[in-house]
Image 1 (cartoon, helix red, strand yellow):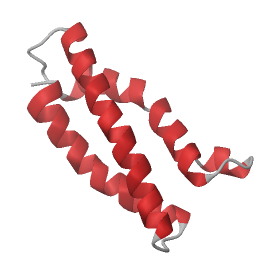
Image 2 (tube, rainbow, N blue to C red; image 1 turned 120 degrees about the vertical axis):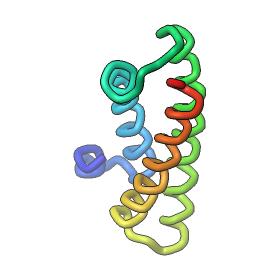
Image 3 (spheres, rainbow, N blue to C red; image 1 turned 90 degrees about the vertical axis):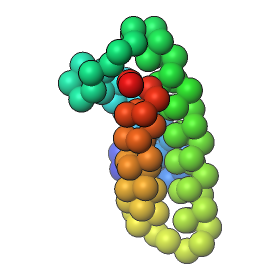
Image 4 (cartoon, rainbow, N blue to C red; image 1 turned 180 degrees about the horizontal axis):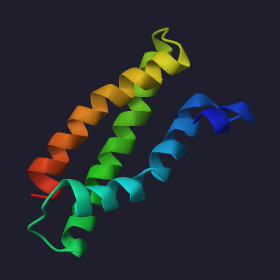
Length: 98
């Protein structure tokens, strides 16, 4: 996000791009290192894609909300990331990689 904002991209699209860029790393690390999935790669990948779409929407909406309500870009992004970190773990643990 930082690099993209430095070249003139607005905060919300830059955050969305960073979110998408981290998706592949999150899936691979979650599947092979963090969880012990009972389902196949195709099944978990589909679930991950559904969860990812919801997470991207939540990230975008939360960041826009915090910015609209006066938080600085970095405070808004850190707050959004902190909230979504816990929510993502629960979704991954209980549904995606169970």
